[in-house]
Image (cartoon, rainbow, N blue to C red):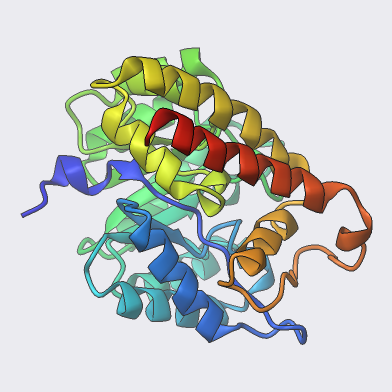
Length: 310
């Protein structure tokens, strides 16, 4: 049986939502995506997140997507989900309580929903405390430092409170700073709370400091490489260094019109029928240098796997 320490550790892709050309959810492609992640050996899935274009899904669509994923996963790995997009506190609570009924293991709150951009961390903490009391206690809780519509990093006080509350098990950390991650690991030591780093450039260093997980967009391209790094960085440190250098550099493609670039790749390998997004246009994609940049990144990754015998 999986322990709680293991449950929220490892590699957690932030899931895409495939759409057809009419921008409707493509359920067949979503099923293929789920199976692709699992075949790569990932340890959990993060559904209804920013990569899922949750701000462009209705509440009903988001719940339907998560229900579908939970059903297809069928307990093979844990699933966490957010869909936390509302502004008013009462609406947020209603939205989150409904998502909690989908059968997920963890319910993820969005840090920038807890206060406006010009409000203090004290406001974040008070809102978080209020909302936690209103959420069902039969589901684990987490927080995601989502960069949209604005990026709200968690203060040390908030991280400490989450660790001490015993309700929170997962922080999707987007600080992209090894010193901050190291400090957060100390604040959460001996608690239920796991830090999932979203940043590839600091990932190996974070693992060395005790970070328990990775949950970033690049697991939509080569999740098996992140799985290998997580599972072997201690036993094969020289290979891990080389792989981490590649992953750090490859992750720069996040800037090439994500999530279009990830959906393009998923179409290229046969999982998606289309790379349509709701969050941004994709009409000019094939007329740019972006496709060849993605193709080059993938070829280098495949070559490295052979070179290192991963």
